[in-house]
Image (cartoon, rainbow, N blue to C red; front, side, top):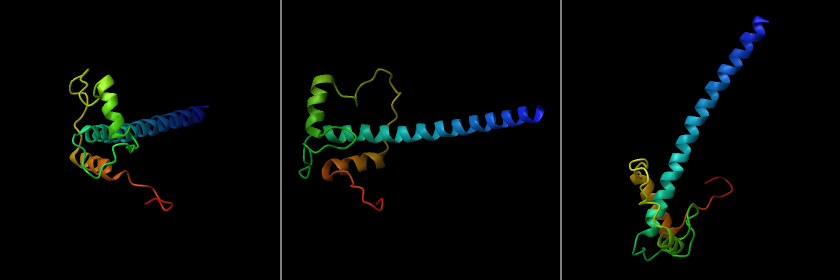
Length: 115
């Protein structure tokens, strides 16, 4: 019986450590996706749009610049919403640069080999 208890506690402890590690990893993944979403909204609302931009093209994670303009006119901008000041981390410059590129030229299209 003590062996079974020890084994059960070991499995429980390892499960707990594994789940905490997954939660930490998942939080960072979703934080990066939230950064990209805010960056795409920011880039899609910038006026004037770059000449290469198709205002009706979807930005994958967020609606097209044309739709974003309508949405923010109706409901306000999610970028300037401040229910909890300081709760939203600033957009990293490299992510904003990639969002600006996606607004101008579209998102990368995945291929069969993953590139």
